[in-house]
Image (spheres, rainbow, N blue to C red):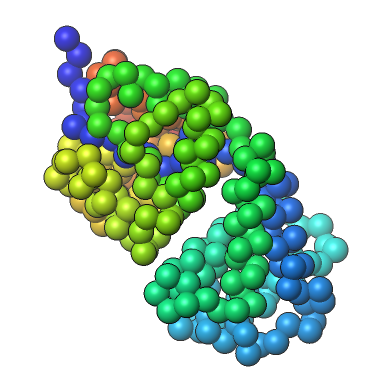
Length: 276
């Protein structure tokens, strides 16, 4: 009889189980900005001044202005530059969602965030979301093993559930952005998932994610952090020092349910040999 590695498994969604083409994310950002900002040079500093009290741009309250200029320009930037800017704007929309829940919306910024949300998670966005190779089979193996399982994502629950149903997979437990006040890297979602599954947070619970924010959330929730490293994510995940790094969710699922998976130790991280 197999011995499972964890008493419960939590997993991120985007970048771990499904992916969205980068060109479509770019489209969502630019179109949502254009819903309010037809000319970036006419942006009023007044309606982004509220960002100065946030940690969004690391003491850079003008970061959103700079991003607008960047996104709406005709210049062709390298992919790695775009990826960093996309990370910044994702943090912006998460911040706006938190502000909406706690203090009410920031009018013009909220219009941008709502437009992005509709494009990113609405019917057109659903068609753009594709399963990552092997990930759905990994989810099925975990569900069939009987190990308590919950998705914890910064995406809306309805978007996640609809997408899974279209793939023929129906995880019972999902914590989405609309279920919590604070997004990752805050541990609220992970702690709520543990409560939902009836387990006490600890090393016997694992959270799988693809970004340093996921590692930070797991660490704050005192659960085991599992990095899922696809392509360009390896170096960033290693720098975050999770407990494990696997080359895909399928490989992690095999390990979690008790199948033999070779791991090597590198600087205190149990890691798939092909990633070393």
